[in-house]
Length: 136
Ligand code: 5GP
Ligand code: ZN
Image (cartoon, rainbow, N blue to C red):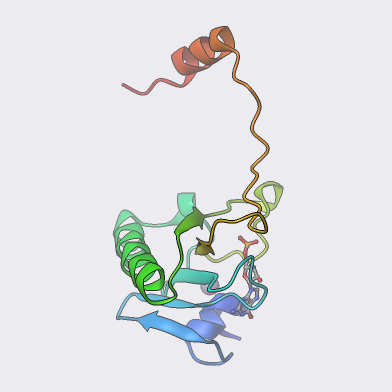
């Protein structure tokens, strides 16, 4: 298997996939275990394990493709909205160590549970945290 990586093998055509989009640098295909109807993965063809391991050029190609594919899915499926999900590290739920963005279409309604477990923010704590994390 190319690079001993499932997504490199998909990009190389060694493992079949339901392709949605392809260009020189990027590939998009349906997730085999979808969160919702139309759940799509967008990957750079060049291997990188996660966001921090990726070149800025590769990221630019991928995020442009994410926008293009999401716009297409929203129009053609159609869906009412979508989540972009990108996991880094096992602690964050990353199970395939090749950079990928999930496009998860959303349809509204009672059956589409999009809870991300929010908690009411403590303004003092948020202020301290912003001071600690500020980059500008
Ligand atoms: P992660 O949890 O790493 O962010 O997401 C990996 C995703 O890849 C999962 O949603 C999983 O269903 C999907 N996946 C794993 N193996 C394959 C495969 O061989 N083909 C396709 N199309 N998706 C895969
Ligand atoms: Zn790979």
